[in-house]
Every structure is written in C-alpha cells, then in structure tokens.
Length: 240
Image (cartoon, rainbow, N blue to C red; front, side, top):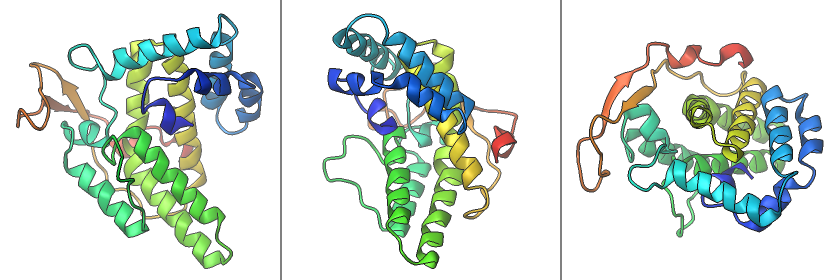
C-alpha cells in the first residue's frame, strides 16, 4: 500500500480501499506504533467528508504539489537525494548492489529508480514475503538478516527525514500517509534491531536550493548540500 501512495496520483479505487475500515486499522495499529494509528485515524476523518472521487482529486493535487511541480518539486523521494544531495547519486548504486545480493530484480517497466521511496517499500515487501515462504529456520534467519540490513542501511536511514519534510509542508492526505510510513519504519526498526549488520554512522544531507537544479542529465552540479549536525545513528533511536 505505501509503495502505491508515493508512486503516482491516487486513483479513486485506491482511495476507496484506504477509506474502508480506516478507523479499525487505526485501532489495530495502536500496539505497533502510535504514529501508524494516528495516521489511519486522520485518514478516516478526511474520508468521512465528501465522495471518493473528491478524495482522489484532493490527494492527487497534494501529490502534484509535493513531487511534480510546476517548477521544481517540493520534495524528491529518493535515497540518493537525501543522503548525497543529488538524484541518481552513489546510494542508488548501493541499493542496486543490495538487490543483486538478495537476488531481486527490478521490473523492466519500472518508472522510478531503485532508491525511490516506493521502490524501497517494494524491496522490503519482497524480503518479508521471502521470509514468510521459508520452511527452514536457517533460511528464515537469512531473510530476516537482509531485512535488518536494508531497513538499517537504506530505507530507515533516510525515509524518516523524508516523512518529516512531508509533514512540514502540512498536506492533509499526505500528512496522514507520512505518519503511517514513519510509524511503520520505526516499528520495523524495533523488530529488526538484532538482525543484520549495524549501519555505519553517516550524516544526512540538508538540501538548500540556492539555484534551480535541472536534473542529473542537464546540470552536473546538484543543489548545494549542508550537513546536518546530528548523526544519522542518533536519529529516532528510541525504537531501535
């Protein structure tokens, strides 16, 4: 579900599925992480008004404003952008390397790079499905270790900051999605804290748009990065 929300504008069918039982999901998620529960209740309140097509239209407008434009998008939902200051940076190669190690392949018609937030949620889902299909304990341990590595070194290393940036833009629907996503990652980190290698300490990159950036194919110089003082390993460690 999370991968679909950040991949394209919301369709009415997806919004209908999300709205059905949103409050019940909120109650059930309370034991997982409070943010997940809060996000579902917020979504339930939003979908209590109007019709499904209106929800989809409002959500799509938020998506376009945040990730499309006009002009420079407000946010770039890719690991490389958050960790090196430019899209299609070195962390994209690291994600591809992890996929190769795990035996995962991107679909030929994939519309976004492998370090896009939607794609990284799909990678985690594949790892969980691989674990669930195992019969031997050693095989299950291998997939749990890969999950721990991926959450610690990739998805969990930058997505919390991305979701904070969404919240700072104060969207309604995507504000709810950001809470669900942030809470879910915190929950996964707590479950997987004993699995996989520990992450190297690494700072995130704060992007300052001091001049327009036309993208990796047209301008070799990314926006000027500023290092965030707090190390990555100290962020949101209350759940890990």
